[in-house]
Image (tube, rainbow, N blue to C red; front, top):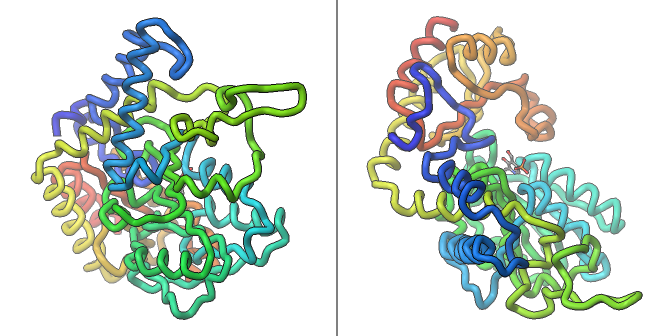
Length: 386
Ligand SMILES: Cc1ncc(COP(=O)(O)O)c(C=O)c1O
């Protein structure tokens, strides 16, 4: 695709699950911010600031539109990344409102560790739920009474999805709990299952969504009632007295400031808006290309006897190991051929190492930038090595 024309001949980037490559319009938007309207958002009265304000506001609207959530109920706040967003929420949740915290076995360390820290801080018990092979959760097997549930919507090693997200959200709410979704992996290629589902918060990383490095929290306005003011400062208040303050977030208009302490990454926020436009306008052929590349690579990987795939079905993110071959060495060998893939446990140590007992793995994660000859090259090189 022309929007990734900077990719050199023979360079095969297979690490989109970590950071997607940024298409030209996104890089251009970032440059434009720095060269045409570099300014602090939401504070300045000069012309450049007004341009920034308009674009930042538009990005908030586009995020809600992308997720099919209503501005009447939801607010979009910007942070550093998914990890930061989840911790920002959990570190401020009032302990006396809940009875336990729940997560699942296939989580990235981001929610997995944050729920441990939450349990330690609050003294509330923590429960780790099982996930089915298709990524769903057996809702009837769990008691969600007054629980804080933090789970992913798509895994970062095989892309399996929380297929029954609607059912689990309903069950959690009915039992008086809240549900926070780690959508880091879902946003780029599986956002459909998340759209319109009224969870309490969605945290994701724009850098996995063809946008610059940035975190996003999309949160239900009721969440504020459940939080202490634990992380506050500049940009968040309407008035301050010697020993008291009035949060701007008390009014709907500036509610987003509740999670936005200090100056934000304005250029990155603006460019996220451009990434969302870019995704919306993508021709069907671009998605077909990703689907075909995924199927071709998955079929190839699953046909080799010496190669053990974690995936039970095709997904742009796939992990495996090759019998008798150290994955880190294999990763280096691939790198010498221009193929960029990840090795190890991808911050999912608990499940991959301690539940499945697997050796370190290789992860290929495809994106919209991949060309069909990337896949052919991977097949040729892997055949040669194996
Ligand atoms: C499912 C999942 N959750 C959370 C994260 C953490 O994202 P970040 O490092 O951007 O905070 C990742 C990163 O790979 C992820 O894949």
